[in-house]
Image (cartoon, rainbow, N blue to C red; front, side):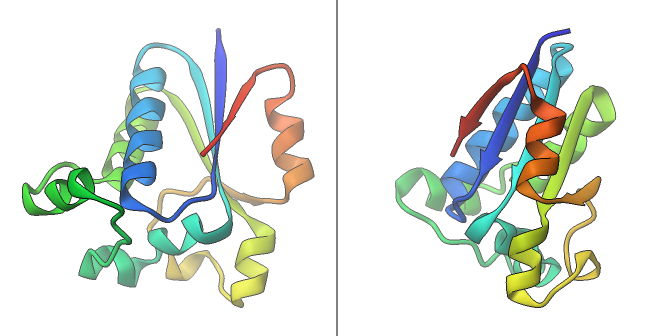
Length: 130
């Protein structure tokens, strides 16, 4: 089985959506997919941000994603998890810096990992940084 992994560090809606779309399509296409959510990207997964749809938008496409009620990044990730081999990991360092735990986040994460733990899981596969 082919494997692809994404390091998602950006909190912009366009990048969140692009990674979630690619990851879910890859998972449905029988690829093993891992997504490591780190840095500012983790904040977009807070339950409060999702409830209010308060995401940082860079441009026109992001505005249209919100206005046209498209399937959102967190739902795409859940769909990929249900239909394929997709794992989503929260960065332990980012959570520590924010003083938060997974209870405050949308329930999409499989595990909290550090960088070394994530790299151990994805060794030998392609890793893309967004």
